[in-house]
Length: 140
Image (cartoon, rainbow, N blue to C red; front, top):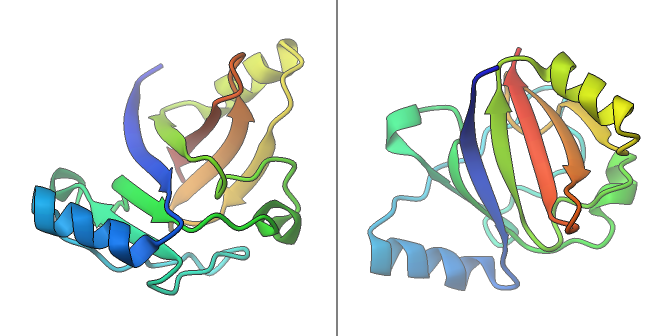
């Protein structure tokens, strides 16, 4: 199965201050967030969410995401895990069903978010043995 890092999502209590750091110090360009029609609760206002697209993967919302922690995010989306608190990284895979079968075989709980925050991507969330939150996604 092929895989690649899709994005890193960092928690930012002050999204605008943190976004200004990445633009002024690293020269990164902030992009606009586009949600799929099936989006759940995602606060996309600039003071709550910022996107720094990887220019080599134009239009895929791959790269760096900054999000203001939202303690109600999981509940509002029917998730057990909260991807807005503590940060996470996302891996894009070619066979999501194989990943899900392995999670089920290992009795690892996961949230299947479907096409949730990025158009054309199916997302699941789970934790590794150290408690790090992982998003796995696949193009649909």
